[in-house]
Length: 300
Image (cartoon, rainbow, N blue to C red):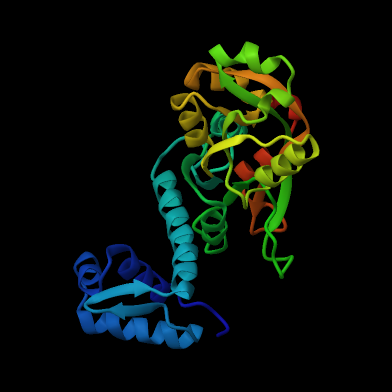
């Protein structure tokens, strides 16, 4: 295929967006054989199936999802340009689709994203949170423009993604105010047999914490293992347990969950990465997040 047929791509996009050939035909005021024929030509031209039939329902294949996300970006930008050409003042707005790993502290993520939200012409932010694997999969399918993760992806193809270190954060032990005095005394050994809520085992933070606990000969009473950083703090607060979070988030942790800093976990850090599918960053909003990193900005 030397050149993409954008009419075919548009018909495909409409079918995927509306959920069926019938709905797309009604929206486009076209006959069903026309759309069906154009889809067949489109699949033949790109050499891959973009739909699979599940009973009476059409579902996108994995390749179809990738094509759909490209198409959605193309035609969404076209819609934005059309609106701007019709008389909108200033620059046309753009969407910024961000996937945040649920292990990232949300207050830290907000500070990173505030760089573009407070810009003169901010993009429309579309943000979702999930586990790291899902976020990375959606990034590769172009459902996201940017992923914020706690570890760079391990990939056999180094050109598939590009990782940028945004921040290196000190980790502290947090607990209910009533337990601060007792656990501050003799810290970190006071953590031995104490009730704690930990990150899940496959997370980079958990691996670092396990190593730190082993070095100090500490065996806490593990009450829960939770991947989501916000849920982890919420559970710790509700069951009168201790947990770990970035020291820089202490103000938000105190205000939202009533947990106070007991002590810093020296030697344990959490790194925050911005991951994109572009080696050369073209999206100005992403470039602003990656290109203006100052670790001091993350400290309240």
